[in-house]
Amino acid sequence: MAPAIVARFSEITLKGRNRGFFARRMAENAALHLRAHGGFRLRRENARLVIEGEEGTDTAAKILSGLPGIANVSLVHRVPRDMEGLCEAALDFTAATLKRRPSPGGRPLAFRVEVDRKDKRYPLQSMEVAAKLGAAILERFPTLKVNLTRPDFTLMVEIWEDGALLFDEKIPGPGGLAVGSSGKAICLMSAGIDSPVAAYLMMTRGCPVVYLNFHSYPFIGEQSKEKVHEMVRYLARFQPASRLYVAPFAEIQTAIRDRCPEGLRTILYRRMMNRVAGVLAEQEGALSLLTGEALGQVASQTMENINVIRDATPLPVLQPLIGMCKEEIVQRARRIGTYPISIQPYPDCCTLFQPRRPETRAKPEHVRRAEAALPIEELVAACLGGLEVTDYGPQYYSASW
Image (cartoon, rainbow, N blue to C red; front, side):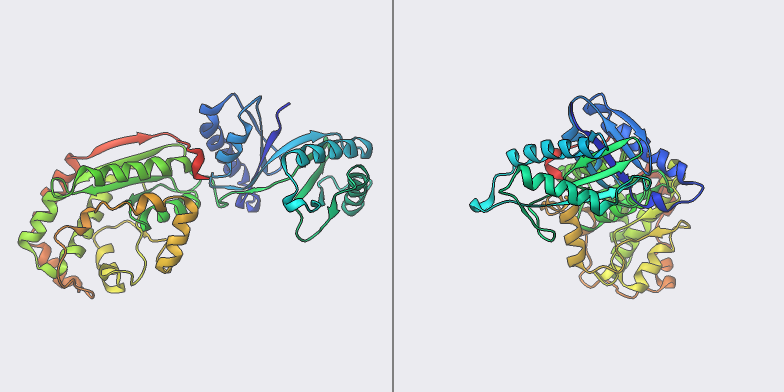
């Protein structure tokens, strides 16, 4: 019989009377992500999900370990909880483990036993159960050694009211909250290193993310657009439904180049992006915008410029990377798996018509005076009229985990 999967909740366990809402959202997300990968049976119990199926459990465990809201995932075997049945199951489990774990360098394998007594009425303490199981394993497999600090494998046991679970691994998940338990955000997505990390972080805070990319065709080639699609396809594994809008931006950039001071170009680009994103947020029912800015990283991300750029929209602008250095962001991108896509050498629209000397401390009155030369409403309307929309389901690529 195939093992079951236990996916343990993260912050959901800290919730009070509304815990059921967060747990239901987590269960719904898991069901949607697993739907295309087999006939799984899923139920909620004791701050976790239990998933059973005849096949595909390895793939399902990998999928679940990537979902926001999950603390960790284990492939488990249900066994009797009486001491005799538990010992026999532990011996069988150890024998199976030894078959797939050859001894490294010919030295004896080391193990340890961890017991978590969920049912506190169980007649033996956790340490007593661990000692009995360890002794039985050593008697059956005398070549093994006990090492409590650096074992080659760990036999983990959870004792519940209706039985016990055996497993040897807790695959870490992202933690946080299930996507959909917080408000929706419009992510201004460039597919560079920063904005995908920002989107991922907000998904782990429960925010469904809608992606908005600005593309400057014909100045920027189609390869740049495909890079964005590839990034959104990758990020689609973290939420049940993903939508990408690609907005034509060349007309806006040309107008800014021709009518506005050169040093303010990047700031004016971003203010116009926020205006377009604000209209889109109203259509999508989103409550905020989301960007990948980090304070001081580039000229447009000084405190003064960030404040001026935010001023173009009444919506809050979430900036989860604001206090990170570039190396921290790169490390997170590597862990998430977005980094190889981000470093593909295709430019985004912000590289177009870059000023030779960008303004680093823009004043609001100067920016508004420059924008007075632009037909803002017409440019925003034209940009929104040319939107391309693509929807992605919860894609899964096993190589990512």
